[in-house]
Image 1 (cartoon, rainbow, N blue to C red):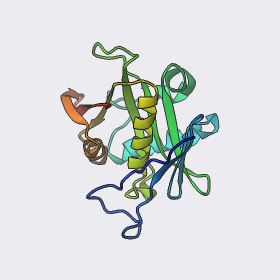
Image 2: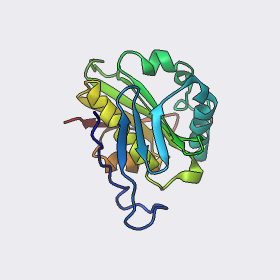
Image 3: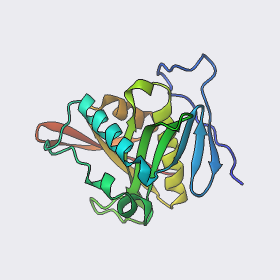
Length: 199
């Protein structure tokens, strides 16, 4: 039996939820994992989600000026969901509204860079929320769900990165206790690396 877990709102953020009515994240099913957060259902990626996931990804990066060929933008992984996310200690979650429309997403996979042992370090990637439903706590709910999955998968540490252009993503990471570890410049774009120990 899964015990419902509380998720607080976006502290310090304006949301469209009525005062005092911030939704709670509840785990509905262990495998395949499913959570509920207000009118958002967070579940494992299905192959039928690919077009929407690509759209969320591309729109999110375009809104901050990132584009193919800039050295930061890539999407090959989204065409290899099973191999890179859903096998061998990974996860990819999609958040859908009651209408069934996917509006949020995020991935988790073994981290293979900078001397990490894939068995104990995970990488959180592809956090996106559709612009028309931002500021409702959906990004926070996806992060909480991914952190929960990371613990279940045995990760001791999570790593991730974002660019200086993606300020909401950086604020979201920091709001969950992630610490900046380094910065690097890629074709003039500042890429910020962060990590979070899982206790």
